[in-house]
Length: 80
Image 1 (cartoon, rainbow, N blue to C red):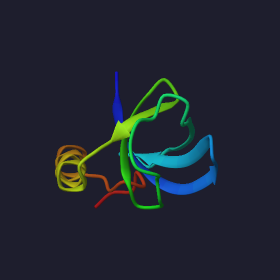
Image 2 (image 1 turned 180 degrees about the vertical axis):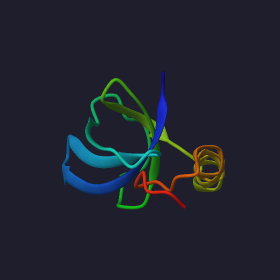
Image 3 (image 1 turned 135 degrees about the horizontal axis):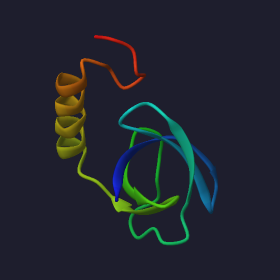
């Protein structure tokens, strides 16, 4: 299943560190990525450790808001 991730930092030309919507951080490979160069704050769709492509910021933030409303938690896993 693909998930949305927000870029936290760009490690090198092949790897980024990203947080998924529940706040967990992961290293993602850029081997399969197709899109503009990434910067912290950008959103991507990721699957099995690979960033696949960019995600629309407004749509990603809407999904994050739904997640927070549904779980009662913010993206760090803490109660709202």
